[in-house]
Every structure is written in C-alpha cells, then in structure tokens.
Length: 235
Image (cartoon, rainbow, N blue to C red):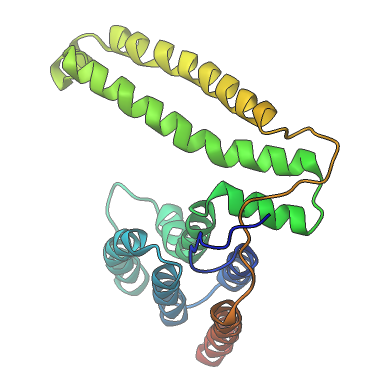
C-alpha cells in the first residue's frame, strides 16, 4: 500500500539529477558571472523544492561570500582570516552544497522508497538511512547537552577559558556516550522495521514523477548548458 499525500515538492530522482548537474557544471572552472548565475539559480531551486528557510540562509551566505570573492578576484583584496583556497572553495561549491542540502532534507522514507524502486541492495538502503538519520539524532542530543551545560554554568566563556581541560571533559564524554547511544537507537530502529527481512522492501510513501519534476529537470539542464556556453564565450 502506498500513501501519496506526503508532498515534499520535487521527487528524489529529480533532486539527484540536479545534484549531478551542479557538480558537473561547478567543476568547469566558471568565471564570476556564470558562477553567480548558477548560484542564484540554486537559490530559486531551493524555493521550488519548498526549502524556503534554507533558501533565505543560503542567500545571506551568498551575500557575504560573493563580495569577498569579487573583491579578491578583481582587486586582490581578501580578509586576513581566509586563504585564497578557502575563498575559491566557498564560492565554487555553493551550488553543490545547496543541492546536497536539498537532497538531505528529503524525508528518509522517500529516499528509501526511491532506492527500492531501482532495486538497490538492502545493505546500501540501510546504510543510507542510518547515515541520514544519524545527524538529526546527534543534533537533538547535542542540543540537550548544550542546555544542560548552560543551566549548570559549565558553558560560560569565563569557565571555558579558566578550565579548558574540565570543559573538554564535560563536553567530550557525554558526546562519546551519545554517539554510542545514537548508534544503538538507529540499529534497534532498523531491526524493528525489518530492514534485513528477506522479502521485497515496500514503503508507505510513493512520490511519482510529475510535470514539475520534468520542468525542473529540463530547466536545470538548459541552465547548466547555458552557463557553460556563456563561460566559454567570456573566456
């Protein structure tokens, strides 16, 4: 049985295609204007994928790193805290980073359903789900640890400077224990959901390809081709 009311915008294959196109295009050593067009189009893609909060954050990031990269490329001015390699990497991988974030924000159920449809081995599906669920689980644990340290006055700047070794112990020991606990929870969840069952894997969620997916895929391909052609023209 499939449930199709879990509408998250674009389908998983479309997001994978956009990621592949972003990687292929960003690796072409683009000039500043073609790369700017690619980066701005990635923000529009985030909005289309219904990740508006992420789009706002990435737009703010682009508003900072864009002038820094332009100042370094055109006038040779750069912040003393950033090396030329860091500036180029932050600018060049912006589109790839945006496409990866959109894909990772997809519910794991939809990703596993997409992998099952292409008959992906169960071990790969299980590893992918554990990988995707690990970071949110650890982030929730870290927020609880941070709040506990603040309530006990162990996370103040004065105490961290005065007793760095104690602070390191207060942070690292709970983190290591939470990592072990998170791994146990994810393993138990996989076993409970019969991840290793010998029968074919099914899913509650189905997200068929729609007109919006086709439009996004064609538009992304056309944009990437146009960016590469424009980059060759400016060369």
